[in-house]
Amino acid sequence: MESVAAEAEVFIRDYIGSFTSALNSLDLETITQIVETLWDAYQNDQQIFFFGNGGSAASASHIVTDLTKGALGHRGDGLARPVRAFSLTDNLALVTAWANDVGYDSVFLGQLRPYLREGDVVVAISASGNSENVVRAVRYAREAGATTIALTGFGGGRLAKLADLSIVIDSNHYGVIEDLHLQIGHLICYFFRQLIEEKLAAVPVAG
Image (cartoon, rainbow, N blue to C red; front, side, top):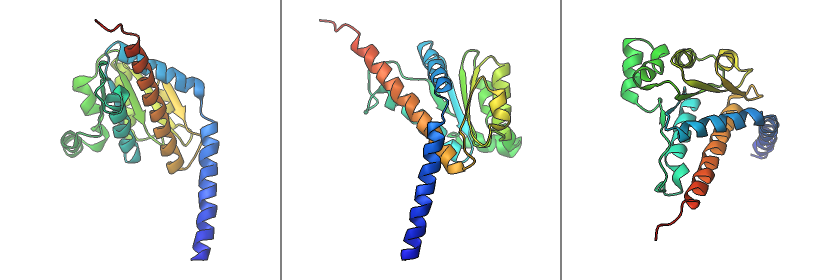
């Protein structure tokens, strides 16, 4: 048991070290641009679509939950207009319909076609940056006039070059990359909450 504990401590220190190094190398200027882009979309009542596979799918769902509920306060019942954010990973029936009838490469593209409008924002999450279904959806979004954002790692892959704004986590470890994608999601969502609370506080109380 002692040997396991010692090995675990080394692993934990190494993992935290890798995470901290990648965290400290984040491109804050691009993250700021992403926040501004998403806030502008909210101000203009545009839609924001998130998607990814596996752990990235979970991150997409988590971030959308925080944006559509958490940004309006802890109870999600703030008086501000809600953020129109959607996770394309959550409609199991549509995902399986597209995967079964057409192919897994179309599961996100197929969902974007009925809803995406010019001026909307698409946020694609892919650790490798090479997931074919994600790349296809982003390519379609660009052609449709949407703003595209990518959260990647492993050097960025095809996705980082395709998107209008890209954050490439400086790591080749899936866990570290996914950790920081979610960290960026929390930065966005909690800053939204702060801005929304400031806007509400500035509204004169009728009386």
